[in-house]
Image: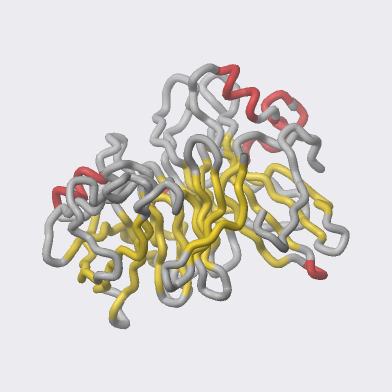
Length: 366
């Protein structure tokens, strides 16, 4: 850890939770919410669901073994499985007391989903958990996957009824970030040819009542490659005008949204992952973007009240693995520094980047 910091462990895989289940494996994206009397509500994803073997899947989350729990909450679980064993991804919620520095309550809050990677918090104080998969019904699954799900923070033990937000698109979701003034939700796609999306809800402060899905396109270029793998077309600090293109058939079973979007002129990025809204900007990471494939940070801001235009800027690009390698989740500190979590092989770090471009390290996970 950086000098002056300390840490302690709040929750570990396999520990018993307040609902009688065990803490699941593969924690990923997380957000905090204000609770009562100064307590903090944490909602944490669990990226469970790669079907290498049924044993690997089941070892990651043991709630399927609890018949009493399943009998009580079966209707709340999204995919109960083609073989009677529910999909084991989802979220857990923790109630943290900063005075005692302990978790007071911990429970499963979303169940029956797959590969819940990142997501994002909403201005109306809920958590959107994103499935990073397009697994179809069949095999282990009884339902199609590739959706976002909304989770309500609660200090009481409460498994949310899992309802897919299908109008936001079916693709390999990574993260979302929402403009608090317009309720527009920006979305990343974890593919090496993934698009950058926005979802315009029909009703403010509600994603479940339908809306329009659009993909970002550079105003002067069709289907632009933003990876910088083959050339250095995008320079740090340069701004490019963009436009938004409507995308139809957003619930396609063919996993083809990014192809159809690119055919219409949408730009693509190398593994869009972490995403955060701060100060009228949307920041997002491209995990292996850049000439050296070590990662990029982009930022977007809209222009005009109707939000029909905007500009895109390459904010940072790593030139060396000693600086930054494979940025994943991102947040923006209250003082304006970006805080990034690396996700690669070996030792991963929490990296801070100042508005000046200067970087520093908060922590290393060995």
